[in-house]
Image (tube, rainbow, N blue to C red):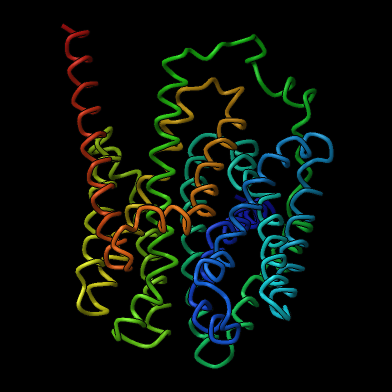
Length: 396
C-alpha cells in the first residue's frame, strides 16, 4: 500500500473507534446520580444507552440518504454531529438536556455506522479486504477500551461531565476523512455498474428463518454484554471491591477481551468452525456467572474479560453466517438489519435487565443472565448436532 492508500484505509478504520464507545461513559452514572439526586437509576443508565437507540434509527435512515448524497457528506455530517453532541453533553444543565445531547451523538455515529464495514467491502478486495475487515473489529474494541480508559483517567482528575470529552476525537475523524477518503456512491446506477448480480434473486424461506434465528441470538448476547458493560462499574463500587476508577478499569479489561477475541477469531473459526458460536456463548455464560459470584475485583475482571472475549467471537461469526443466507446484492440491507439487533439490544438493555431480574440485585441479574445464556448455548448445541447429523445422512 502506498502512503495515500494507507492513510485512506487508516481513515476508514478510525471511524470504527466510535460505534462501540457509547457505553464507555457508564462510569459517569454514580457522579451523575450524585449531582441529580432525584434521577432514577434507569434514567441514569439511559444516558449511556440512548445513543444506541438513535444510532439504530439513523442506520435505517442513512441507508436511504447515502444513495442520494454519497458517503463523503454522510461521514462528515455524522462526525460533526458527534462532536456537537459531545460539547452539549459536557455542558448540559439537566439530565433532560444530557439525554438530548447523547441522542444527537448517537445519531451522528449512526449516520456512518454501516459504512465502517461497507466502505471496506466496496474499496478493497482479496486478502487486503479480509485483513481490513479483521482490523475493523479490532478498532471497535480499541474504541471501547480507549474510551473506557479515557473516562477512568478523566474521572480520577476531573468531574463526570468532562468524561464526554472523549468523543471530541470525532473532530480528528472528520479531518482525516475529509483529506484522505474519496467519494463513494451507492446510488442505483453505481451499484449496477459494479455488480454482476442484477437478476431478481429470491431469498428462500429457510434462509430467512436462519437469518432471523441469528438476529435473535445476537440480540440476547448483546443485551448481556451491554448489561455487564453498564453495571460492572457500580457493581464493583457498591460491593466495596474498589473505587470508581477500578470499576472503569473493568470495562477496559472487557474491551481488551474483545480486541483479543477479534484478533484470533479467524484462527479459532478455522479450527472449531460451526462450533464457534457455542464456544462464544459458553464463555459469556461463564463470565457472567463469575461476576455474579465474585468476591473481589479480580474475579470481576476475569468475568469481564470473558464476556468481552466472547463478544470478539460471536459478532464476526453471526455477521458472517447471517450474510451467508442472502445474495450479495442484499448484503448492505442485511448488514443494516443485523446492526439493528445490536443497537436495539444496547438501547433496551436497562429495560430487559429490569424485566428478567426477579431477584432485584445486580448479583441476581448476572446469575439470571448466565442461566439464559446457558439455555441458549444448549439450543445452539442441539442445532449444531442436528445440522451435523443431517449433513452426514445427505453425504451417505
